[in-house]
Length: 158
Length: 158
Image 1 (cartoon, chains in turn orange, yellow):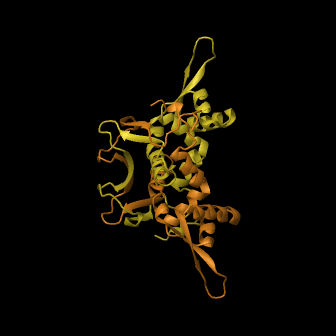
Image 2 (cartoon, rainbow over the protein chains, first blue to last red; image 1 turned 90 degrees about the vertical axis):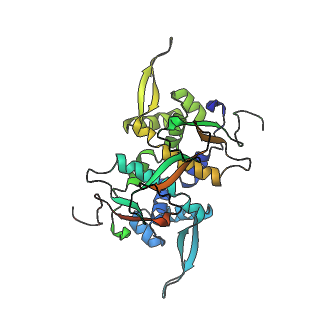
Image 3 (spheres, rainbow over the protein chains, first blue to last red; image 1 turned 180 degrees about the vertical axis):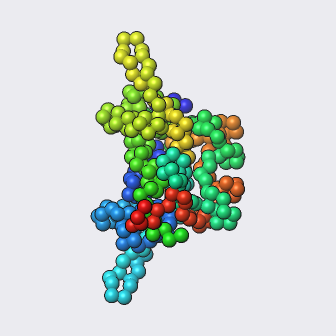
């Protein structure tokens, strides 16, 4: 495949980043994966401004990654709780991959601040690259790329 | 674990994003994983400005994710080629996870533009979440988090 001959406009990595590829969006998702559902708790933990958190939540709800469910506590107005949808849960490998790399290369000398383990057996959770035939890839060099059904040549007339 | 009681300053996801969590950085890395090593080719394929690409390359080299190797063609001044280091290669699960999600949820109706397959057997390459005991996790709910050695309580005096 002559990679440079292809248009990147419809690249799936690019499209994913257009939705979640902003630091605060991924921080909001980290909170969601850790069970934090309410605006005030998210904002308080992240230390970002209300406007930023509200904007990121809106984008994530609009994209179908979080769902907003109203709740009401006595004496307060109705607010929303934010929960991951299946589309949101499917971002788990993204979060675990980022965590794994950061733990390996950017942790303080004390070690990683957070351990993610398999509930059943207690072993650390990992993002593993393997093929549908269950072969683990030890290096990107063991993979190859080819044009998919949605591939578009650059400057081509569609 | 009372997740909200912990400081997120040293979060490994956050630290990773502080280095690569900008769309153009990840686009430069996508090019690198596809074997594109020269400034002009990267810039031409991405369509971003010279200043943006140069800044992202500088950050990635400073972080040890790319290495810069000088090359010289007759009649031109010396330039750099950019290659992934091992630290860079270790970002492969991040890229594959982003690709996989985008392919599933954001591809055109025609289908994904790019297929990544295992060179040896031809099967699609996947990011799989499993534990060190080789149990595949079908849902984030099968994992649990606990404070790691580098965990810091919020507002604590260190």
